[in-house]
Image (cartoon, rainbow, N blue to C red; front, top):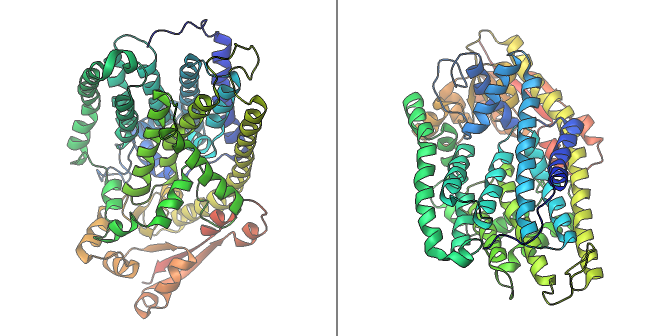
Amino acid sequence: MKPSAEPPISKLVLLGVFALFAIVPFLFALYTDNRWEDYYITFRASKNLALGNGLVFTVGERLCTFTSPIGTLLPALCSWLVGPDRDDAALWLFRLVSIGAMGLAGMLAFVVLHQRKMAPLIIAALLTLLATDAKTVMFTINGMETAFVILGLSLMLYVVTVETGRTWIWLGIVWGWAMWTRPDGFIYVGALALSILIFKAGLASERGRGWLLRRYVWAGLLAAVIYLPWILWAYSYYGSPVSNTIVAKSLHRAPGVFFQNSHNVLVAANRVRDIFAPPYTNEPGWSLSICLWYYLLWLLAALPLVLPRMSSLTRASAAAFLLTSFYLSYIVPFPYPWYLPNCAWLGFLSLGLGFHDFCSIPSSPPRNDLLSGLRWPQASLGIVGTTVLMQLYVLGCVSQEMDQQQRLIEFGVRKQVGLWLKRNAVTPRDTVFLEPLGYIGYYSNLKMYDYPGLASREVISARKRLNTDNWLDLIEDLHPDWLVLRPEEAAPLQSQDRFSQEYQLVQVFDAKRAVSALDIHGRGFLEYDQTFGVFHRKE
């Protein structure tokens, strides 16, 4: 592809795009102070590293309890810079780095769109959709690695569509970076790379597939060199380059069950909807019309693959979106919500590029307004405006939901459980069996027997040895000092004599009354964690 004949983009415009992608998550963080549960799983190891105790969850146990090297090492650096007693400052520093990464991702996406000579209206709408996607905004500021994965995707798209020189070097850096962000980072950049190769998009449209394939080979070698140090270090330090979290989650794949689920139409349809939807819309509290809207959005993002007169880059974006949708809907046993923004980012690109191709009139005389180059400009304005307004409305709903979630559940219940355990533990070596590992594990700083075993070799060993996921069997085998259970988890256990003979309920943390008084979308998400009972093993 030849360099664009368009005049250079002004620095002021680029700064404005960066500001859009930075200000939205920054304001979301100020309003909600959202801190994801899994951040505190990672941050316990990060803080231990900053304190000189090693990159471990439990001091003295070399176990890899995280999946993202970047998402763990950067918080460790932030904690070391601000001091070990300033956890809030460390999180805010990490947030600012993540927000900066998202701003850069937005700028790169804008340059690619500008080079396509898209109508200013579509560029503005697409950038707004990307910048205000609720999941993307959330996981940019709540301690997850999402912004760094999306930065890799945007840089990948930029490298293969804009002449930079030394394309294979930049590709190798991007692919290596993707692996440092997540173990499955290669899925997202790989889907985009494969789609661009198949449809001869970007630079390959003039230079051919052979030219691009040769650069892929060299880039793959460079990416391996970039990621190899982490593999070697993890193997020497933990005894395995595979995270313990992956081992624990993989045990959920009971023989035959996953195969059946992967072909269940209803399960696949729900997962497809979730790609664009806010987290956990399957919980009560979200209206049917909003859920149906996200089914429609997924279909519209997939359509450019089969519609006529679509450009090669549009088809490549749609193909990458569908490949990653297939990965999240069929391959991953349970696609956690922070997996989804990466796929949604590709989907929004497919949506915007496809709309541009469908509405463009190459032979029409150029215009200088926001609707230049669009067929049926008034109708286009209505469609684009409705989509953007729906996106902003949902972001506002999620902001309310996460504000209440943080105050009532995270700070009001789970953090308090952790602090209570820390005060009441007989010794620092007391053990706790539970499922929500993050807040309670971090603030108690006790030895965790978490299910499914993200931070515990003992739980994984028991699950394998007993060949069961029955909690009562696991508890009897592990004999933890404490149990932290939701009512629906405790009820079947309390009905068993062998449980009541060994454990007694000693404390209840309950936000049910406050949660039931809320009138917000997504209240069911809060209800799931509104009550916890703490059980202690009898002497």
